Image (tube, rainbow, N blue to C red; front, side, top):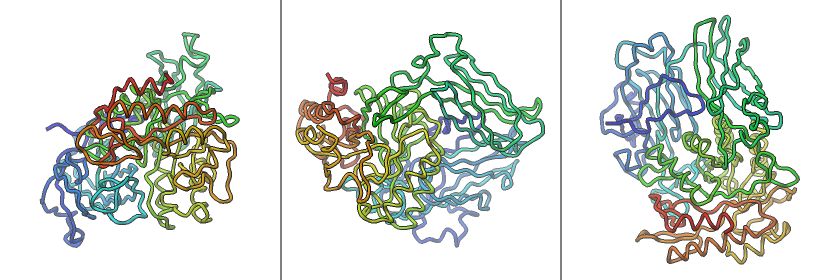
Length: 585
């Protein structure tokens, strides 16, 4: 049986040696909460099996049970390859929803809270090198806790409205990796196109004598940087000028080597850490040279005004829910969106698989990175969101495709933000927290309405084409609209000249088959769908105020049938017709 999702899970930090632990695991529901008392982490009760990395609610897991089970356990055995015997061993989890306790050979290796971000543990001290090892994971996912950052996962058993089936437990790849005690711990790329520089920040784990890092950077097969530097500190920063290193001088002024949806140019990198002549670590990576800026209220990409034509992408799949059945499915979603003339997507209420971002980088596709929000506010909810969001930005910082950060959406988890000072402080703090770790991208405090401080005025409006055309004739008209009866800015805050984008609109429902469902408006044929899309998108394209849009949505999702594609990615109309409209034809 082939291993599911067998691609390398960390595309900008690649080591050659690794073992994928996806596939068949032992699995048990713990509805009676007896696993800890009975020490299942020492002797696991073989009750059923599950296919990792698919949640038990999914068909691909082999279980396909959508009912509530708040505590689940996983178990499998593994052995360490002989050529890893001199290495430390790290176990990695791409994402586990929501709280995780990881045991190796009956001993606790790590506890982690947060359902959207990766975590890892050095398990060297717990291993048997010449025998089978037991890996056990206990997961707790309180189904009805509305203060957990869960995005579109519903807190009732049956999906309805805009909420869908939950994801409990392991939903991204689990894998092992051998490393040296002295190794590269992390890297971060920051392009500075005005200077022609790429900045590299890297951290090392455990310093050693005569430690050096060599960096080789190539562009389209041409090596343009070969550098070696001594490493004396745990944290290091280097800058490499790229502009004057090209043999082909036509590249030096930008468009030939900048990253954009039209020209997704990427630089390949190899980093090698040595102690003298001994190679301790080797990482393959890549970056793109691009700049996102806002100048005098104009959104710019690479110093040029850029109109964003985005599609709302929730990243759900019929058989895998939040987990794509294969990497090709992630790639295909981008290809279909580009085929329709969209130059990017807003990943809605989902922290997406890094392999999606890899293909966005490779194919040229803008991404708005968004956090999965809680539904209700509490001090604990605010802490959970802030902690996990920090790790989201840290994980995805170096992807050139990500151009906007969006920690909060439509006042989810801050339902009283319009007038509540505490919730306003939370929204504003999320804006500034994001800015404190990333100065290179715009940030929205709360997309849709009820902004506090934002770099972009993102508005959600599902009204008719006629109403939309009238609303966005002037800036004043745009910022005084009240979609969903919500003001665009909270009490005490106001518009400061930021770019205006309609970041949700449309939602036209069309049932291609007998599926029941809903949308924000409805049509009865493919031709009607195209014409309604033409009207509502045309209204925005006519506006001299609006600098971009995000259409709802790419695909149907469960009971929502307002996608341009069905849930299983079949087009509802000729995609070339949508492309013509997006191109203003």
